[in-house]
Image 1: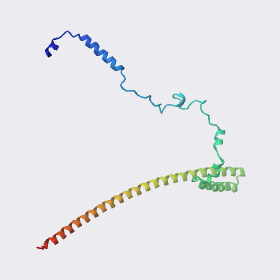
Image 2: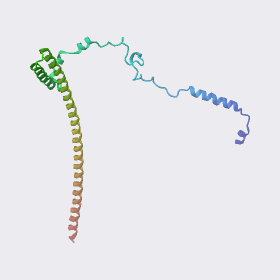
Image 3: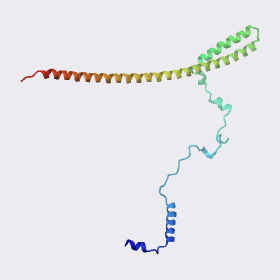
Image 4: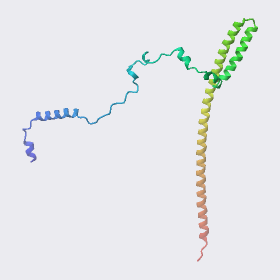
Length: 194
């Protein structure tokens, strides 16, 4: 029977090629998986602004001086002494302004010039003192982080050391107990009660 199928050479090779071509075309149009719609792009800007990252002027309110002044509250000025480094920097500024203004007034400058020097000295000294204080605080924070890390590391090392010592103690205790047990057996092994 196998020879019968091999002997039949009437098969049209063009029809086979056409069938294969049709199958390939059909398989490309078949959908194997369905996907949901893709999520919106996280990098896309709202309202289709395209590449303009500044946005259009009509969409958002342009900041103004009046708007900035409205954001300042009286409570901010009442609590200014509670902010870190502010109290010290204001005291340094006042003291240096008093000193410089007084020196300028004593050595012959007019009152307005001495007052201008006092105000300028107040501003410069207060800002410089504030920045120095902030730098010290950030340095202290970094040092505290390092200290905490070192303390945690030492705690871990100490715990590991204690665990190893405890393991050695248990090992010695077991060894001693086994030796005692052997001695006890050997002592009782000497005596024969028959």
